[in-house]
Length: 316
Image (cartoon, rainbow, N blue to C red; front, side, top):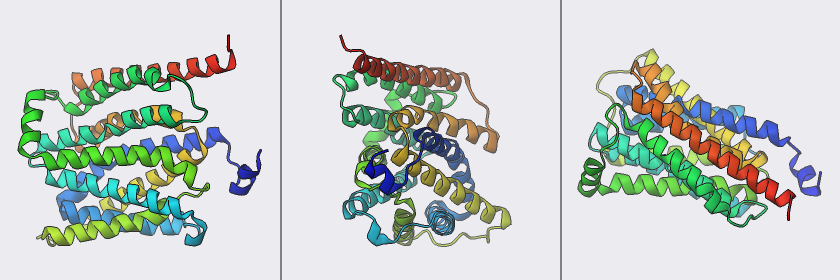
């Protein structure tokens, strides 16, 4: 154990990685719960309520360190990337004109696991020659799987998607920028955080931005007063999202970033599966084909990682 580990408080990497993997399970419930909340409160008000409630839950159960303890560079860069990602995703979904565009926008957002895998390969420690090229085949296969899984019963039609992007490019650009922001956040912030997780610090910033977006949207309050089930959905969604980010932050700080990067491909697949269960939808053949592609891509990345580690430990 080195001096830096003693200063931060040593955490077994296997345990921390397991906690990070729990985030993927929690996030799988997010899409269905956000839909339930949006149907009762509207898109912008629902999002603002979720993140406000999430900020309160984090302050109670995952209280942050005094702000002076956080490295300034981490607060500035990490906070900006975190808030931008959450705001851009919320806006991109709200700006989608149709349900089909919403699916396409979510697919653009789900490019972040691929970006994260490639960034982790390029910037990981220790640096390994050819790491990006080894990670690329698995990343491409898994991305195809995500497209199949998210595309629904009819799959995604490329010609229609191109037409939708040309007609309404802003939500797609926001989703792409958000995917870049989140992948950079996951890869670069652990090194600058000093072992401290800023999730509980950043969440109120997201809530504030979403309230500003709601006020600017002119959406107003729902016509009918939401019932207890709607408010319970807000609480459940806030717990799932805030808990997921807390687990993810813990995992990327103390666990294996490469393992979490590969496992992150399961996020959209589990999300679709959970949405099907909660919302009473049927899972189609393209979904199960997508699952197989995601598993295959993840295995390719895992094998590439093991091969690279073996090459380093057994030089010619």
